[in-house]
Image 1: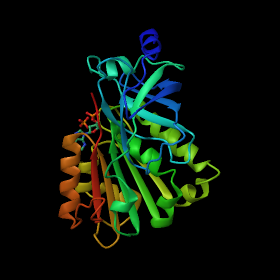
Image 2: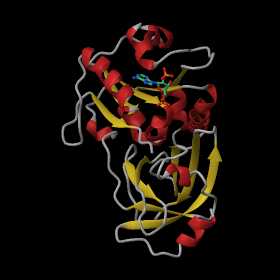
Image 3: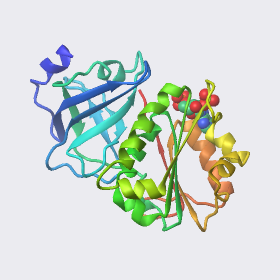
Image 4: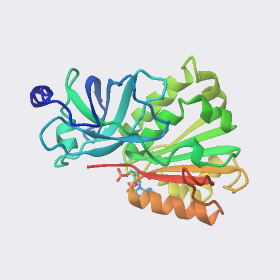
Length: 267
Ligand code: A2P
């Protein structure tokens, strides 16, 4: 924390904001979240990511999905801790008052504009891949565009689900989106490496049909269902294959379609 505080004396390079850490919460030895001040001029669309680094002469930059809603006056991020990760080995030590650098431009594909209208919006996430959805489930536009929003979160361990559980509870209690979330949002959790009421990878639960039975919804169809996927490279590949087999096609900002994909960034 002292290194970061001292390095904060260094002015950030052009195109970079220097922000102050407001809050840090550690969940497990692999996961933590932090909140920091938000520059007054900074705009983003729910679901986008920014490049984050620590002050210094040669900063290491990593992409982080913005987990806070666009109406929040702070910015929140949900991060993995990699013991020898070039950024996260240091970033995990930040404390309130420290400085974090952020590049000025937000970008990404997990945005509502990249999807055609539909009935149900599926948000498939594993691990820290829930971060962009933490922003999207607190955006009123999500509930204006879709009757039903289903957020799936699969982790190795039960303790890793806590961020999402607290997020959904707070969202259902929120003055702005709480009523929409209580009526339209479903949170589906599963765990793969510990006992838990719902066990297994989301891909296996889709292939067996168990996911749809448990939620009492029909199987995926290009007429009604839209998808957003965020997780490891392997999870993206396998989930995307299932959506494509169901007849959904991948969209982009300039070509909206039935699903979009973003990798959960680590390092
Ligand atoms: P598993 O425990 O069977 O590997 P990670 O922290 O490694 O990103 O994993 C987060 C979650 O994603 C774990 O529950 C993991 O299950 C699951 N997972 C890993 N690979 C895939 C995949 N190819 N498809 C779906 N889920 C996956």
